[in-house]
Image 1 (cartoon, rainbow, N blue to C red):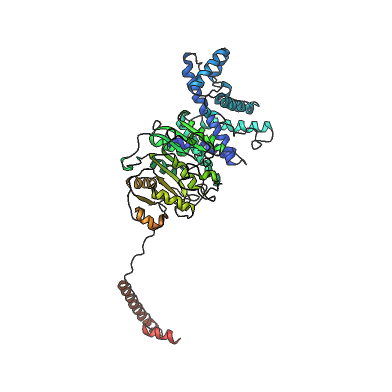
Image 2: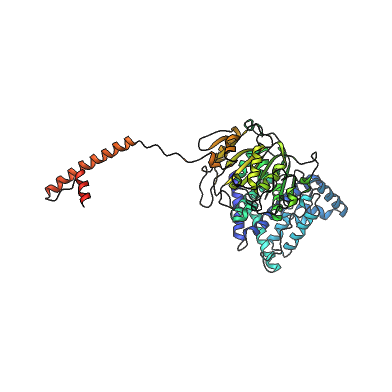
Length: 548
């Protein structure tokens, strides 16, 4: 599918959402819209796998095209055969959908305005969750409240609303390919559109693609020699504040479908956690290739990351994150002894920025790179943050500081920075990139153009220095500045004023005075002919003004 067709599909689906949500909050409607799109993907994938599994026994499509072929197979086979088939499907695709719960069946119920639609959908979602082979599918639809009064006060009203939504979606995507990449990209498009309408809440689940491209472009380069290009493979990738998973998918896109061994993500918000799992599957990432955990990264409540045995500790070739900015947290005495913070101290209650950074940094491998988006305050604030920053600098762990333009995010207008960290790095300096003035101004938001993104990555890749854009700063200079990393202190974008040539200015003033005298003489001739008093000239004029 071309980019033009993809944009058309995305716009078609967004127009449907925009028309149908009515007074419903964009966040609430997002969950219904994206869940139905996901059900469409699961159904297509399941039917394709069933056809392959059953071979010649798979029924041909009915001429009326109203019922899924799989429903015919269920009708003519015994319970034992059906049970064996579902067991095999559980083993191969890791989930089961009964014929009446397939998208085509649901869409038909919606088309005929069946009063059983809502009930059938509920049963279908529960069946997929409970009959799955892997934990990936458990609780996947738990936040989709089909009985919410936001859909309607009475069952009939809610059922009618769902009929309308599903029918419109079915009609909207009927003419497009249903390949996983296409539906995945459409899903991503909708997440972006809903984020744009969610204001401050958008920061909870979405990193703008332009910024995501910078982070993913950096961490996929060879960490020791970025100029040599991309790594062939990353064994493990972690995003501990993964939102809808877009950033992790961007890293995967950089290296291709087989370029990452395992994707790890963590998300505190249950709804967003479910979005991330759906997003992974919709983009063709197998459930065995990713693990998303619902929990609090600061408390480190994921058993996988709490492993104390160094031999079993998760080490990642890439860590990326866009955690909540200046998040207020409650550090306690137990956390001060936590293996992530013990050597650095705790971030202040008022801003957990460094707590997030240290959490991700702990799981970074020696040959890996970490790129994290943070507010500028981490670069210069004092107290506990200054102590953490100083240790990271003295240990030669901060590789690059990138300043981005203001107003790039849906959730905040403040300018942010990207910190690139490494446990082992060759240069003993820090690269500063001040990209704050390289962007396209928009009405509601600013955006980075492809050439702006390429310039940042290329500057990092080759560690380039450019006047008013980038500099490599020695540790000696940083130490003299008390380990303050304020970008403008090292790379100012201010253009110096051009020197004034006083002789040239004097010549210009003399010429102007001469022109005034010539013009006044000419004017006085006209006044004389008219019998009017003449105007004073030069010094005479100055004398007149003095006496007046």
